[in-house]
Length: 88
Image 1 (cartoon, rainbow, N blue to C red):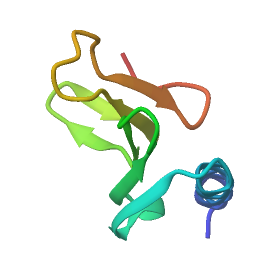
Image 2: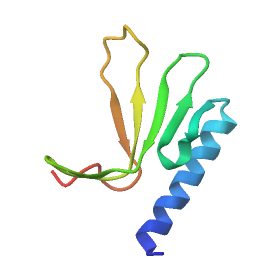
Image 3: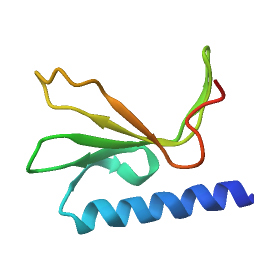
């Protein structure tokens, strides 16, 4: 594996451990790999590890999406797993 890929996997492993240690509940078949997510049972917010990809607007790097509960006026947030979120 490339150094970059190994680094991303290591970061995802640490994030998976952090969520579980804090009592977040995994949802879906493979939350650490982007198929599912983690739910904070106290707030109802869900967290999704997004592997990123190439889109019409450019390349989006791996990041964590924070989805607010239904009815919240706060927007969805994205936190990069590396130095930057996208090429823009």
